[in-house]
Image (cartoon, rainbow, N blue to C red):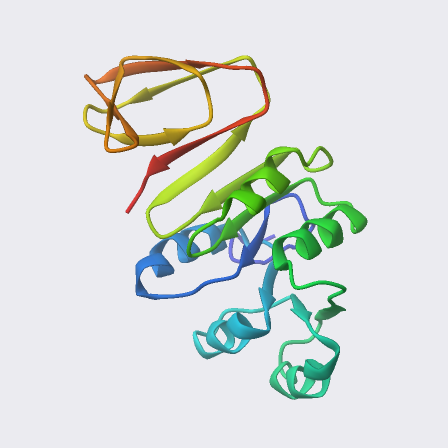
Length: 195
């Protein structure tokens, strides 16, 4: 098989895109490298198609079905899910679990406390990584999280105890190049500045 042949066997994390702008194009394109299932909402589907990105699943309200079917005319195969609520992330996570997926990368503009709590306490997906306008976040399900980070890297976390960091304006800043260590009762999130 050629290395250019696309295989979609759902081994890669799905990619849920709920916000699209110039700031996140590069991260989206890097996440598309392994041809994940791409999930959009009504608002982002047209933007993605315009950028020649194949959309596989679309979250819609019932009154949007005819319009989205016209838009998705050349996107076959695709799936539509009529939402039961206005919570796109909850709807997408439920859909992924129903379809047997175990991981997702979520692109959004900013995640509110309700969304973070929903994701933090979700147990059916093994891996959820969040990308907002400034931070990349992940959920840790272990008592201790360690990672090598460079000096002045900015973090946000719900963990209690951190080594090799100081607090500045509500964010943690790595004091020197090296390992950081977070200790907390899982689950907790860790956001590191990427933009």
